[in-house]
Length: 164
Ligand SMILES: [Zn+2]
Image 1 (cartoon, helix red, strand yellow):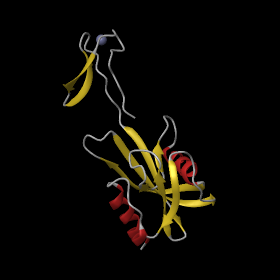
Image 2 (image 1 turned 30 degrees about the vertical axis):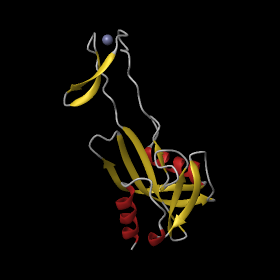
Image 3 (image 1 turned 120 degrees about the vertical axis):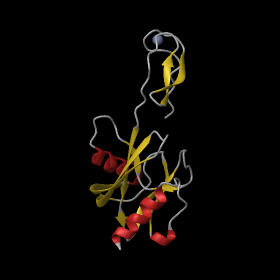
């Protein structure tokens, strides 16, 4: 996830972080070439299964051993809704479809932009997916497991509230 910019792509001189247009950015100490870092787009899927929210226990950091909803990075050129369904399938074995936008979440200084969808399970069978996941489950609102990310708590609470 961490990107290193030690040497200039143009002239090979060392880079250093300087304030450019109000943000810290890697700048070439020789020719002045600037790296403008893009945000990373993450999609997540909120799914009901047996009356609870589908969640995964993370096998990797950040948040190793803690729980979140299925989520992952959007590939360049990939439709965001499809990425959410792909990540869900990879992590949980469930086939799903994004139905509506739950919200878009970003924070000052955070490289991640999180897009979350309300989805629907259309097939598959819940099982532990790839190496990024230790366990999968479906949890009612008052039996939620410990959350990996504090940003998730209001997103999950709003999802249960929407469902009444
Ligand atoms: Zn340079």
